[in-house]
Length: 420
Image (cartoon, rainbow, N blue to C red):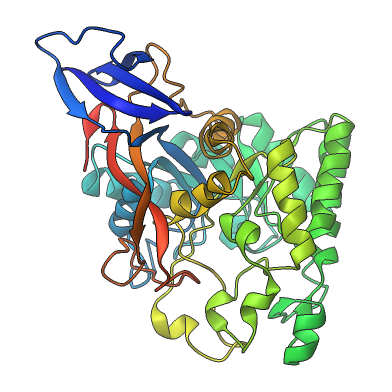
């Protein structure tokens, strides 16, 4: 079917977008191209037109933890959050370290959302995520994983990490590493610093993240192989990565909206909802991360969507589980950076779409002829309140719950089909 989204706003310009079936035909200035009689027209009325996004770091919880999230509810949150592709981590039960689990995840996604979003499972780097024996990556690759990671269980052994990188490279799989020195401050609750001292709880120094990142980039340099550093939270780690990039090391990295918008003071009063791994750090770290997304040192944004049920978060700070639910809110939160002139709109496309597509080999929509017709319309002026009723994810564990926010995804097309 030939279709047109009329009078949308894209990079500050009014445009008409033409697409046929699942492919872009052309995008022209609004009113520039005559609309054929047989064309189905959608009036955008000035809503912002954006390419569908990729979230390269999520936790869908199924199989094993369906009480927190199912693939169906996670995909519904992704759909309404503007995502056409999401990569999900392997810390399920059983762990995604074999073809059966990978196949199950992909089949469940197709059963619940046959038209998208697409789920790309991330295979475990080691069996059971135990960091001792390599997972069968050939089998995982054949089953359809898009990357390899040990997720939140850092690989302490440099020898094992080296073998993971070498083995994954044989199959063209990106290795994503959660960088944390597990021997430094075990049992930590938040960032180590003035706030942890004031609250009297154990903190994790930023050094722990930077040490593992430095090891990883040195391995990447020595082996001449790529590495992707997960959810960067500290200025020290940014400096390690920037230095490696200046030497030509094949390192890429990500951060999350919460590290750009919040800092350790959010845990004032033992606020357990703000407990996350890596932890929220200092104002200086947050400002350094903002600079790093602007200059390209940080390649992509991810949500690290980690849904939990209420009692797992609203408990004593040392007992609360780590993580935020993020798929519903990602565009709303990061559009604030555009609104405050901290990031250009095209920078948002780069961080959420183009670069993750390049790193993880996913075709993205650049609004050129024959690009996939994956896009959404966003109202930057609509105000709304995240609540149990307005969030599609089962996980309501976000620091922004109950706050009035501005900006919301209104309509989403994947493969040329309008899904809401």
